[in-house]
Amino acid sequence: MDRQIAFFRNFLVFLALTGSLFARVQAVDPDTDSESEGTLFIVGGALRGSNAEVMNRFIELATVRGERRILIVPAASGSPARVARRFSEDLVRYGARPGEIEILPLAVRNDRSTEFDESTWAGNAQVAAYAEQAASATGFWFLGGDQTRITELLLTGEGEDTPVLAAIRSAVAAGAVLGGTSAGAAMQSDPMIAGGVSLAALLGETSALFRDMNDQETGPLIIRPGLGFFPFGMIDQHFDRKARLGRLIVAAHGCPEGRGLGFGVDEDTAFEVDLRRARGRVWGPGNVTVVDLREASVKGEGDARRWENIRLHLLASGDAVDLRDLSVEVGQGRTPTRDQEYFHVPDPAAQGPLTPNPFLSQLLGFDLLDNSAVSEVETHIWHADGRGFQFVFSRGPETQGFWGTNDGTMDRYSGKNILLRIEPVRMEIQPR
Image (cartoon, rainbow, N blue to C red; front, side):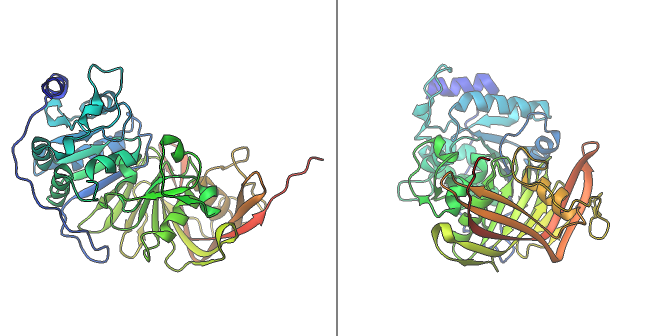
């Protein structure tokens, strides 16, 4: 322990802070204003150190009543100290002072490139000194990696809060910001998505067993208990790049039961959530995709399931959403696309990475919302054995699209009330 504390002092000034440990706060009712004064800052992974918009906003949120004490939590990482060091250096470059940044030594994996064994940090969530350290923080940052490591360390074997987690909850309730990227985003909902891919999820393949990080990139949908800071639905991350729309739809439909909302956050992009006002806002170059299944119908079982009347909202930087009724406020500088579409392409090619507009946000923006020639576009996903699904995105009477630019002349789209149906199909490819 002495060696670890000496490291943090030499690295960024590690302080054992005094403070009181508060009881666990009650879960937020998504239909009412929360008593929490805090903010969530949910980043979809792959956060660039050069992303000034997101970095500056996190530092601003971590300044509470003129004070700033940022606690980096490396629990999910396979290189805990090394990645924490890198993030702390980014914070300093954007104006945080070294003395305002601390590391919570909490991890399960040892990085052999460091001078100490980080696996010995596994029990620190039960240590009173670290709970006191967390209680006085104004900002928390959970690093990426494996989200099940976070829950394993911060929850007891009975699923109760450890002293450190209880202190984090109390700090957020008092006004602190809880930020995290990738795994640090996924763990904020309860239950949380731990692994799996869209196709397997749509085929009805599920599992409660998470073996290792490879399960994040292949195999069945894995749902595990999360920490429940975000009470409005399921969170998914690396969303558009890893084509996770299908798995978020299945996850949000199944849990938590009756809620039916999912929020997919793109890489290098933040979703800021004001817990007291139940309001979310987007920062960064990507999108947040809101999946609304509250009025959707699902017929059939397993790989024969048919989904209808799914609604999507595509949010870009500056857009905001009321998390109680999903009303969307589009940011400044965007113009409506309805009746003034830029494109007229009757047969847009929307079939994957070797065709134009391969990402979801591009398909919805260029091929549907800003294209006067069509009222719907389709794309497909299928297994090697031929089982698959057709995704049909369409414009209805309430659908609205908005166009603007980002970072120079980069096109940027937002959309409200985009309709989606998913139909089971069977594919067969024959050489000519």
